[in-house]
Length: 111
Image (cartoon, rainbow, N blue to C red; front, side, top):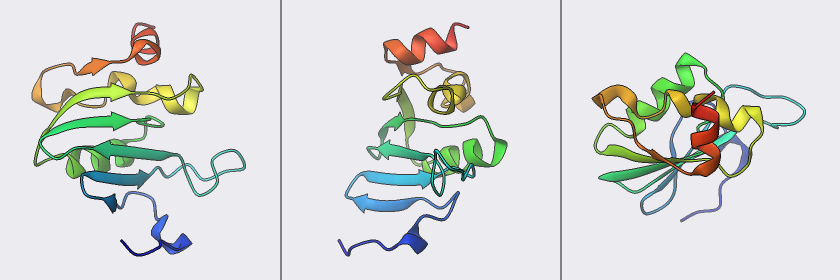
């Protein structure tokens, strides 16, 4: 893979980082998030969403579109900041099933 430059940090655009790994930047640029929170999709058919980021319709739509060829089976968060946890309730629910969530994501979704 070629090295990526900052212009690859455009919100809503899935960028392949390696086979089976894509990054989508959320549209929440700021002092703490830089160009936006990074959300990762791992896998092609069975997909893990890592750090689904803020609940913003356009970002959730970008996640679902990038995962359209497979099924979101797991949602994991790497830390318990609100910007990382907010979409745990929404990510992956388009097929009527709730994906597995790691402990931090389960705690947030239960709120």
